[in-house]
Length: 102
Image (tube, rainbow, N blue to C red; front, side):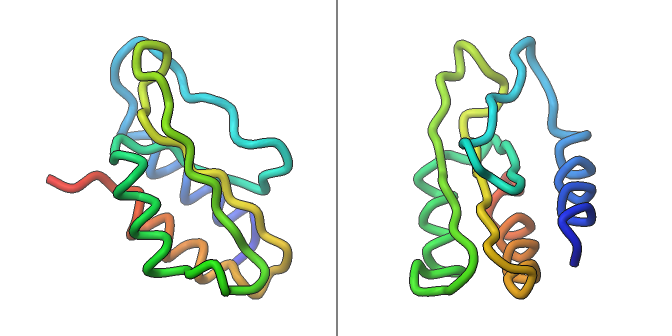
């Protein structure tokens, strides 16, 4: 899946999630993409660790806890892809780890 497709999927997911007055934070410097979520950073990080352990080659994720008095989303996930082989894992992480639970 191309970077554009991942970005389009992320944009689609975010389109229905916006509420409140704040805006999303910036992604980490050098990130190829990312997503903002209302899920707590600790939950997102635990999910990423389970799906895409740090031993996986090519992609890593930076989970940032945000100040909710300044932004809508409490968590930002920045994605750093070193190669295109890891895109299917990236999509799985985005779909599984960032969609809010009821």
